[in-house]
Structures are given as structure tokens and as C-alpha cells.
Length: 217
Image (cartoon, rainbow, N blue to C red; front, side, top):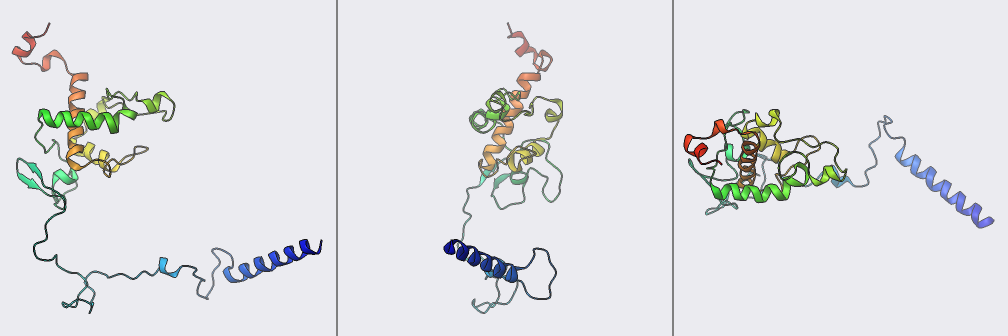
């Protein structure tokens, strides 16, 4: 019994000491707070443009060493190569220097791009949106997600390619961001394939040329 009482007294003493040191959360005080991990608030770092005598130039911001090259490969476009650090519609889905989304996919739509888009769509998009893009993926069928967007809805069909790129890159609502998973070129490939899916779903014989219509059975 004495041991139990001793343990209770020690516990009460520790609790009182902790309360006395930490106080009530949100309580105003002129005393500085007790910081268990001060480095979480004040980290050793160099701020841009501040003097720093470690470097010969005396400033924190340093130019890249001579001969430095980009870590990523350029994406080839009709306007020339585009690197990941450039403010370009290829990287942002927006008109350079503005907040306006580009209307059309900036990459040339080829059979290879469409096939790549189909492969990536089936891996990253189909589990939720379905392989047809109709919103009936496996996550909906097993009840993980109650509502999934039908990519053939008029609202989505009328979105610009740039806005779809932004949604794919950064996510929206319960949809997670695919930017960390898909390289820029693959995101545009997925959008090109999606447009093909939408055309096959919503297209009519009026969209065909005379030669194409003649070949239909």
C-alpha cells in the first residue's frame, strides 16, 4: 500500500512540476515560452541577398558553378526544347507570364503520345475514373469512393487542356495530385488520350470526313 501511495505522490509531483513549467496552453505571459526543441523555430540557414563571409563574394546567393547543366532533359516541342525550370505552358499549363490556361495541348499529338497516354491513364486514372473515363472505376465499385467524376460530362469536356493539366498536376477536391507521380510529358500524354476517349464517346458521324464515313459499315 505504501508503494502505491508513493507512486501516486511521485506522479502528482511530476504533474505539478510539468504544469508549473509549461502553464496553460494559450495563456498570455510576459515570460518566454519553454522550448523543448528550439531548432524547430530557429534553424541555421542562409537568407537570400544577406551578407555571408563564408563565400568569397560575401553574399548568400551564389551563381551556379561554371559548366552547370540542367538535371532534367528538355521536352521537345514545335517551338524548341523546354526545360523544367522555364515559365512555359508545357510546365504550367498556363500562358507564359499570365494566369490564363492554354487552350490546346502544347505537345504534338502523335500515335506514340496517345499510346503513352493510354498506358499512364490505365495505371493512374482508371482505378477511380474507369478505363472508359465514365467514373465507374474499381474504387467506386467496392465503395471506397461514392462519387467519381465522369470525364465525359459537358463541364469537363469544355475545360481547356491547360486547366485539366493543372487539375492532374495539383489535384482537386478528393482527387490527389499526380504531379509528383507523372512527369510533365506523361501528364500531357494522358490529356491527349482523354480527348481521344471523349471524342470516341461523344463523337458522331458528322465529325467524319466523307472518306471516313464511306468506310463505315
